[in-house]
Amino acid sequence: GENVEQHPSTLSVQEGDSAVIKCTYSDSASNYFPWYKQELGKRPQLIIDIRSNVGEKKDQRIAVTLNKTAKHFSLHITETQPEDSAVYFCAASISSNTGKLIFGQGTTLQVKP
Amino acid sequence: DTAVSQTPKYLVTQMGNDKSIKCEQNLGHDTMYWYKQDSKKFLKIMFSYNNKELIINETVPNRFSPKSPDKAHLNLHINSLELGDSAVYFCASSLPGQGYRNEQFFGPGTRLTVL
Image (cartoon, rainbow over all chains, first blue to last red; front, side, top):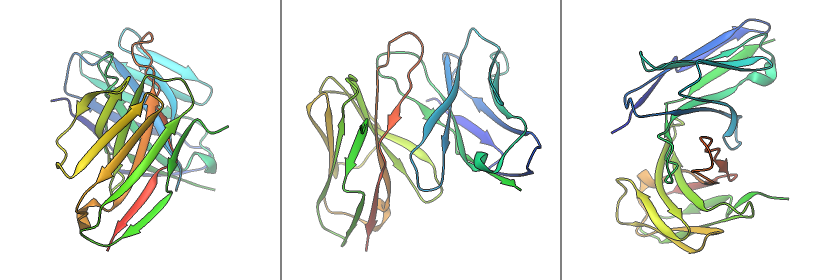
């Protein structure tokens, strides 16, 4: 079945630095790749997503890149701020009526002021 | 205006007991999900219903039984609770098949502690 590997498991950066989180997926049929942010004690929330026919997508300080050949996708956060501190999950899905998402293991990002 | 709500928020119980968690969404979505988030934060899908029909049933013990009385509600009943069932259970809903995006809206979670 589909498997998503996410690295690193923890990431600590200084405020203003960039942060990069990487994921790989196993099922080449996957065509939808969302990223969720979960603040401490809160629910996961979608922050950005990308479809397999797009190589890169940007939304203000966050961007996602996708290498479909290598089955890699990454989240890039620039000019990090303390409020970016959270657990970030990547996920992969085959667009269908089931909507099944396979999540990575999560990355705990700490932004030090 | 709560989009996806769950009750209770906290549940503390003894091993061997039976308990239920309720979920409701007012987004008009067709599909609802149950996820388990363990102590290592790993989010794993358990079940999914589309218009009251079970469409995803992962490898979950038979002690877990979902029920969807209508497409706005998805409840989770757990029999004979075990220590390993302690986790945060999230309900979510979405409208898959609407283009490529399948944004899942999560409830606030239910923290289950089995003693």
